[in-house]
Amino acid sequence: MISLSKPVISEEEKQAVMRVLDSGMIAQGPEVAAFEDEFSLFMEGHHCIAVNSGTSALHLGLLASGIECGDEVIIPSFTFAATANAVALCGATPVFVDIDIETFTMDPKAAEAAITENTSAIMPVHLYGHPSNMDPLTEICSRKGLTLLEDAAQAHLATYKSQPVGTFGTAAFSFYPTKNMTSGEGGMIVTSDDEIARKAKLLRNQGMEIRYQNEVVGFNNRMTDIHAAIGRVQLKKLRERTTKRQKNAKFLSENLSTVTVPTASSDAEHVYHQYTITTDRRDDLSEYLNQAEIGNGVYYPIPVHELPSFGKQIDLPNTKAAAQQALSIPVHPLLTQDELDTIVEVINSWR
Ligand SMILES: *Cc1c(COP(=O)(O)O)cnc(C)c1O
Image (cartoon, rainbow, N blue to C red; front, side, top):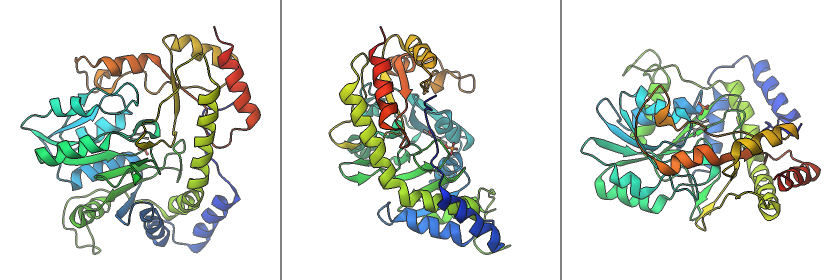
């Protein structure tokens, strides 16, 4: 069986966990602070606030940016439900817009068309590791006075015109095990705004900066030092593992002939969280790959606006097409050349 994704855990991560356990300090402490500082080096020095999941990073990032009841936040419908959940958990309304079918990311024209007097923010998703089209989105937000947020959960180290995603607006990353790097569970809020950073830290820890002097109502969304220690090791290896993903993707794209391979726009450095092909006989190909024991997955079979949790009846044709045609196949850094050859042979023999 060739697995679709596989977290790469080495001796170094295990030793890091043991070091923390032996220290006797296992909740949020020095490892978390070091992880934030080290992540910030990849984020142009912006503030980094570690939390217990990518969803918490989105949620607290939105709250700290002032998103509240009555606000509308424009998001793509072709994403993981967490993007919309985070908006709804602030009491705000997610407004779902269509994607560009080439890159699977938010269509800036659709985003602009969805703006109303209640819109407070636009939050593109760098889906599969492909950066969203940031120039027009940044321009729309500044012209209309809207907050720009980024769901960068799938896009560690991706860049748009050489600028790292996560540095365009207040952003959220995830360290869930299938993501390009993991801390077990975990997330990071990234922002250049001092006040948003301070609010996010307050919300993470019961509303207090100084112990027992709680300033606002807050959560316990802290990351533990155990998780941070794993994240720090993973971060050191992220560049190398990302390069391996990109090499694997290049090989697949050069050799697959029976399906449409993913495109990366010329402005973008794609980090291939997923390598996602399209075909109008998607379910047939998925079954064929299952038979051949090649991992594959549909991200995402149901557009978020159609889920029972949101239940919106709107027409988003590109989102609908992507949900029917997209299939992700293995691209992770542990793939061997033999496995890559097998994937290509099997898919090219599919009729
Ligand atoms: C994984 C993911 C999240 C949520 O991250 P968790 O760490 O699982 O909470 C949010 N948005 C997108 C696009 C994701 O892929």
